[in-house]
Structures are given as structure tokens and as C-alpha cells.
Length: 228
Ligand code: NI
Ligand code: MN
Image (cartoon, rainbow, N blue to C red; front, side, top):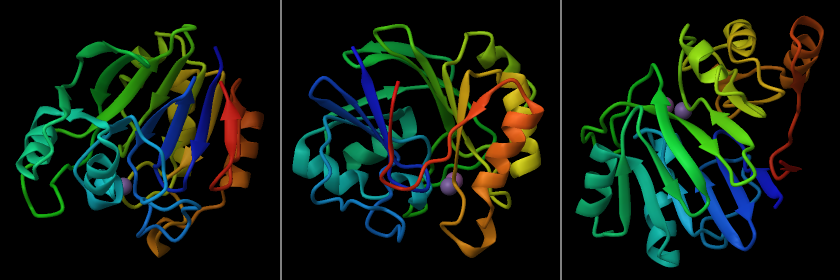
């Protein structure tokens, strides 16, 4: 089974498996780089890494329209339910669950997680997703560099998706150190150029990954799709 992964800019992704769509951090309508609108994006599942508006994005509206299952930490799922959406699956850091699309484990991320209305959003998370063909993808979420990325790398990563924007998350240098700890087969840079303070040159970063680490680097434009 092949899985298609499409980037919508910033931290927003769609995973397409058979005819099911898993949306991650669907910040679309307020994201000038997104090639798709919240009213048209398909979704059977919506995963939210943390409470910030550039990650929760249009999740509530998409969940209401599609009936998608919302997966996040316990606190964010409580908040989603308080907005009138009951179809949620709460998890938490270190915990995994065999969803129909694959085994999803939440990992630590060093960041904040307050929700757009100021509600408490629990701890921010990264996502470690093992697909049915045992391909493993790590979405770091918003985070600074942490040494136990080496533990995540021990699981054997086919792909790591890392922020490189600096200011709110790892910048290019720390993201390069993250690649060395994670040792993925390939890496995709995200969370850059959406806002002035996170402007970066992703192609230079990709070249540095290829030259300075054993990993491959994939430069995506918003709307680009890769096959896992
Ligand atoms: Ni954030
Ligand atoms: Mn962010």
C-alpha cells in the first residue's frame, strides 16, 4: 500500500491512504501559502499537535463539515468537545494507539500549547506514525532541539518532518543537529516563510543536509506530494 503525503504549507499535511485522508495541523484559510481551502479539503481524521492557532487552524470547521475524528492530546480534545464536536480520540505523550490508518504515538515537543481562546492546551506533541507497511514518519511539531530525538530515531525513521523557521522553533542549525540525532532516511523542512520572523532558505538547508548528514532532504513547495 502506498501512502501519499501532501504539504499545504507551514505545518499542514494530508496523508492519503487508500481512500482515507488524515489531515495534520490544518492551518489553511489564514495561511497565504496554502493551495487548498478548508471548505474543500478532504478529511477522515484531523490530528492537532498543539493548541496554537497556526496548528489548530481550521480543524473545528473541517471536523464539523466532514465528521472527521479529531485526534490530539487530552486537553485539546476536551476543548474540541466543548466546541460541540464529540468525535474525538484523546491520547498523550508516550502513548500510542492503532488507528485504522496506522499506529500513532505522541512524542514530546518543547514548546507551548495554549488554545486560540486562551484555554489550556496541555503539553505540545510531536507525532510518530507507523504505517501498515511499517514505514515510519516523525512529525516533530513545533519544538526546539532536544537530545532524546535520538530515542525517536532508534525506532528507525523513513521520514522526519522538521521545523527550520527559527524564532518559534528550531532554526536551520539546530534542525541539522536534529537530523543527526534522528538519522531518518529522508527529511522534509517545514514551518518557515509563513511569517516574516521565520523566513529561511529551505533549499540551502536541504543542500546542507545532503552534504553534512547521511540523510536525503526533500524540498517541497506547498501543494507538492511525495509517495511514502
Ligand atoms: Ni506553536
Ligand atoms: Mn507553529
